Amino acid sequence: MHEMGHNFTLNSPASYYYGGKIDGNANAIFSESMAQIFQHATAYEIVNNFDTYGLSDDIAFDIEQNAISSINLVRSSMKTTSFWKGIFFLNNPATPEDETFHILYDCSLQILHHAENDGFGYKIPLKRMMALLQLFDADLRQRYDQQNSNLAADTFRSTLMVTALSYAFSTDLRSEFRNLNSRLAMKHTQNS
Image 1 (tube, rainbow, N blue to C red):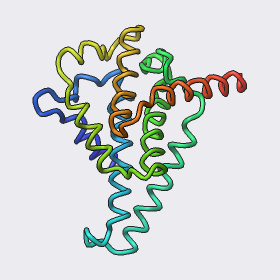
Image 2: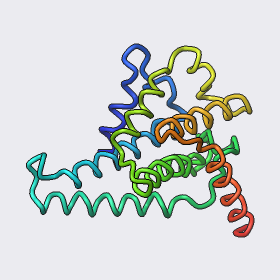
Image 3: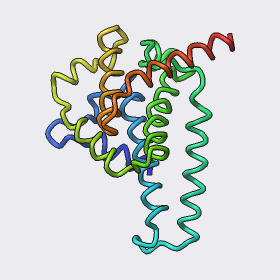
């Protein structure tokens, strides 16, 4: 389901698809986040409507267990990231770790949280989110600046995702991400 999520997100919009234009060192904030979101949205729809798709209880149970395991990974991976600090927006190929690894989980967990806990479900918020992300064009690509970490590019990339998430739920999530940043920074300081 994760890889199918890549197929949907990276091959859209039809007139100026994201694939190849946002990859490289800045891949995680869009590509990996959106694949995670599509993965869990798909699992939610299948598990909650398995009989509509002609699936057995056993298959639905297996998909549910896989989704629970995946969501637990998302939750446990969100620990020391600072969403707003530029260093985490680019994966430095010269280092053994992926500095952007937790970014995709931060974004994913926010949509999972709102979809599951606020009674929205996934279908309508994900459609709204993708509608906003379909505005991607040559100007937005230039501002995305996939190979560079600078204040303008880092701010644009974070703003793009927070705007898309906010639009998905018709809620301004800026303060939520700022609070997330503060909590993670505090936890990072305590662990240092």
